[in-house]
Length: 270
Image (tube, rainbow, N blue to C red; front, side):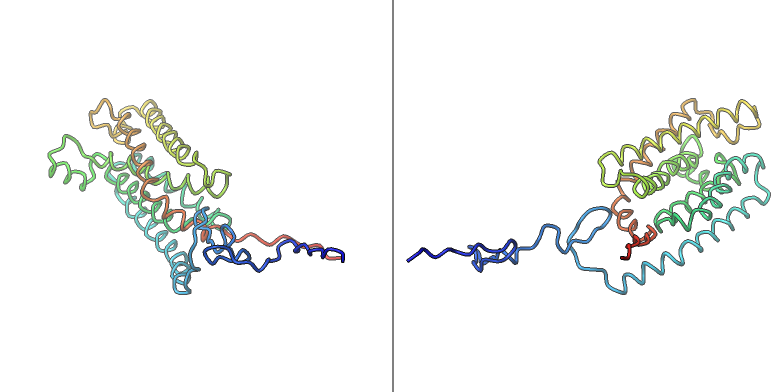
């Protein structure tokens, strides 16, 4: 009697055997199955509830116009009888240019709600400093007297924010428009970009001083500190590192919602 030939199982078919521990080979979950992509990383979890989606959509719809109105109103008020008109223009030019740029690119590159809030806060810091000049902001005078400091610290705050806010701006651009998403080089390059901008801003102050002479003293805001330039760049560095350490995870959660949906590729017929 010829030997019976065993049928070889089809690829992917289950043999019906149960391994030790009660695990069925065919029912073993695939790596990454059920994962949800959050900020470029796979993390297991349930899909968001409808209430959460509605809340995020409502925030993305309402927050940017409210922030825009707040910034425009503050800019207009700061331009009413500022301490020095030239200083006001030099300090607020970033707002005067930045707001139209954001509006022009919004359809193709809508910003996250977190970044919108940070940019609005930075704009308010700039317009307040432009109205009174950084060395004469009343809040800074109060802090100086309360802490017995030798100078108005509002300038220090401004340069800390100069690193804190652009760090998220640069990070968002690189994550959405470069292959650096999830790369270990992302954070160092963001910090380098913030330091480069801080150094460029110090060059602008230098050129303004050369061109305007004593008329640009209020824009410089050194307040007699010979190390003011170094302090400014150092605080921008601290601000950038602090921003990445505190806000990167929060930023990652908002990035997928900010990216505009890409149209599906056309499928040839026939």
